[in-house]
Image (cartoon, rainbow, N blue to C red; front, side):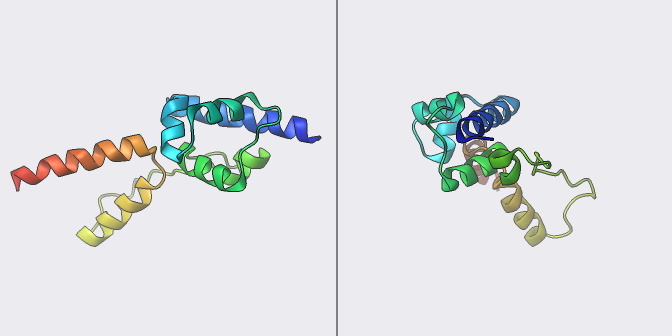
Length: 123
């Protein structure tokens, strides 16, 4: 596969994962710290491809594996919901919240943090 095909395939995977999560280009751009136009360029392919660091940020934000995003390899989804039951202690719950938050779009994490901050008034 030549680099033009590689770039186009990456662009299709970025767009597919973004749309699957219901994120706009603007929301994705804010979550990874780039301009909206940059996300648009990546999704159009051509000469514009994300750097390795941006691929990693995209992978985390879009909740897909880096291998799938960069190469189209199996194992697209990274996030796995644990249905084993509630955490057994506060420390375990906090650790699980932190780990799960790393897989969510920053806009969602900010809303959860704001909700938690507003709850301080009740305790």
